Image 1 (cartoon, rainbow, N blue to C red):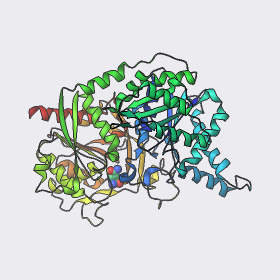
Image 2: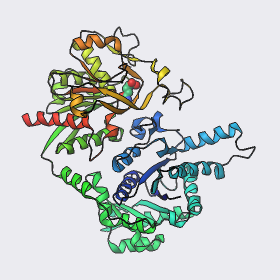
Image 3: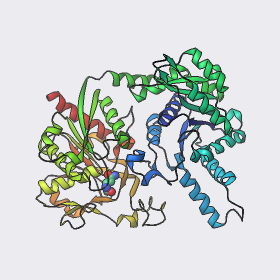
Image 4: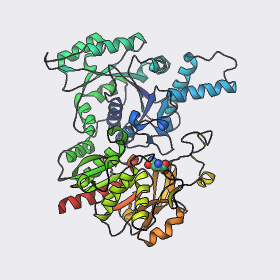
Length: 548
Ligand code: GLN
């Protein structure tokens, strides 16, 4: 097997940035001409995060193959510039699900099914599946969710402990990310939490090879020696992961530390020189914008920025492509109404309504969209945002009183957005993975679908190609019964499914930039390759900002 494995565990507390650290290390190894993939192992019982509330777990990231995954996969895609798939995210729920299914089928031939070896074998086979096939990567980074010491994470840790002897020492590396706090009153970094966390790891049989210390400021040499001594690692195997302003600086900081160099040496990887020019240029451009734009995000999950992770990133990428800083103003749509809409959006150069589910806050979104349409403020509607734009236009520009989405009003006389069940008959690609239609999520259109772009439109101006592929996650669709009427009133359907049966993009000509899409373009945006729609939206916002 040519693939080498790097296991990344976390200690002390959560939210230390294991996902970003894994993605950054992956990106650095890629700059050394190595092929890299990353997998996230999540210890919770949900089979996937698809059914989890974004308030609790942040964004659900959707892959091309229609998997609903952890938001860290978004970081992996953005840093590696490569698509992830269902294989890159596994949960305890998914592991148990398949072990229980095998047990029911009788595959275990009467054996007592246990955590060790059955659950751990299932975990190992999912990890090792990354190394199968002709295109097996040189390096697979496996990020274990949660914190060492969590009861639910034990089977995963046991599996990686076993993998070390299965695969051999030269083929595996354990990296432990911990917190090294700086106590201002004492004037020094404190290493005790790290020592305890490594002790915890050792108690389950895992000796880390590298300690990565999240810290406010770089850790002095004598502290690194102390950590190395207490945690049995090489003196040059303790690295700082300092707080940064721009998350895309992390690979550069790691490089300065010599982190990837040490990894390459320990894993005996062919050591090509790193080529970091593209990263350096991107970070430099971000730090030196030529101007700034203010974009309002009108949504329901505004208190938890993690819920709009990819969106946030895509807007920054769009800003970088135009060399402007993007200041985000999160607006809770429940607070918006016709009496305060002018005040709330005063000074905004663009308004974006993202995806979402449920009626709460929808009327506020519609009010915000009307404001954008009537005041020539660049508008970008994504998924639910597009649906709301259609409702707004139907009500206020086409005279369809009470127009609504079937999701919010089953008895509306004008269901301009409706539950299109027909597509199940011919689009079973992603539905197969769920067993029953009653399964929540089983009715969703998920993953990548082609979209035909109409020439001479804003969409065509952005994409510059006639056929694109974008990722979906929704149940409801534009209702074709209203296509003719809304077109007469000025709506242009600039993106459709290749057979013309589904509206994927709508826009309003005559407005500086007013576009809604049924898919989620934010999932495919990359730092050095901003998504065309985000790039163009920010360009329009910048034009408005310059006018003043
Ligand atoms: N709730 C809408 C639907 O299911 C939109 C979903 C979304 O924005 N992701 O179609």
